[in-house]
Length: 392
Ligand SMILES: Cc1cc2nc3c(=O)[nH]c(=O)nc-3n(C[C@H](O)[C@H](O)[C@H](O)COP(=O)(O)OP(=O)(O)OC[C@H]3O[C@@H](n4cnc5c(N)ncnc54)[C@H](O)[C@@H]3O)c2cc1C
Image (cartoon, rainbow, N blue to C red; front, side, top):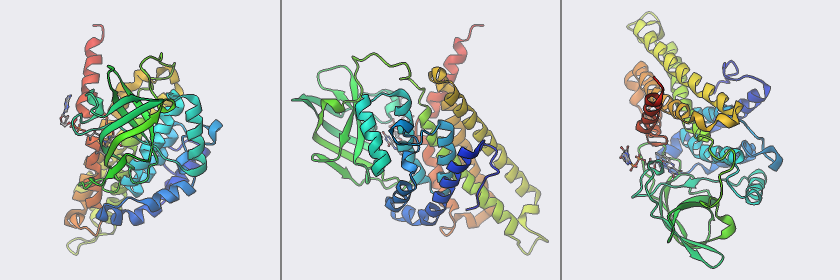
């Protein structure tokens, strides 16, 4: 994979080092992506490389042994991993994004957070949140979790079924959102793998097939009080609402896939010389028009993504007010990424359908972005409400 130090969004030496590491990892992932996609197998090999490279501690605070990456730096890295393999990028993105989120909001009890951060830095521990359920659908819609936490001596017993549990084949720690038995509220619990937990291998999808997003079944899983992470009776901290900036790892991944498709199509257009033409198809006006459209979509989406990320990094007090812009950066990125892959396939022509080329995988993978949060209708509603509340 060619390096991309000319990328205008890379601003300094530290970002250059982070992107160089991500480029190196992505090159290896790209070689294995087709096999993991075909088999629907979890890329344990890629995660071992991520661990060895120290990537898993990218967003862990420096005081706890991590690299303390900003959101902007995280997106530069995640986008590159997406160029190599969308599934690996999205899967590790939940972990990297959540560690960034928790390091800013300090939602966990500090002692527990410090302990977990050290495990990430030392052993490459990983984490994800399991909120989605069959009956509740997307947790962003506000439905009540059917997974229940029932009071027990010194803690809670949790039972239920979670769907879309990305990273489930490799996780030893995960956060489970549950309704509290006999109480109004819900809470997040840090759960460790052990008795009562079973992964049911249900993930057999059109795209993002190597994310290991199976179902997780919990049956009376004991969680001690100290591992309850959120409490309704606790006053929110000063930075508790960060507008969910961490979720920009999602659009970064899909833009990475689009970027790979762009590079592939441009290379193909330069090299493919049908004998009906005096030169390569890159010389044709309709091909140049499509390449121009790809650039328009990619540059627009990346400009929005990185400008919002930079604002989020610079102004911790203003993060929650950026929620609409963060959502918009996601939906523009995903919609543009889908269009970019489509245009790339039109440039390549019928060969783009071949399973021997990566385009058909990117076409399937990029579509999954529509079903990652925040959803497009919710983003538009937020923008509409804000516009309607403006004083005339
Ligand atoms: C690749 C991938 C990885 C994922 N990883 C994770 C993960 O690690 N952890 C996790 O918790 N989740 C994960 N998810 C799940 C994701 O966050 C959503 O919960 C899931 O995609 C279902 O969303 P949905 O909108 O299709 O579902 P549903 O909520 O079932 O919605 C189905 C349809 O009904 C509409 N709808 C439903 N309710 C409402 C409502 N109240 N208002 C308006 N419209 C509504 C939706 O717009 C949609 O058209 C992942 C999803 C994907 C695709």
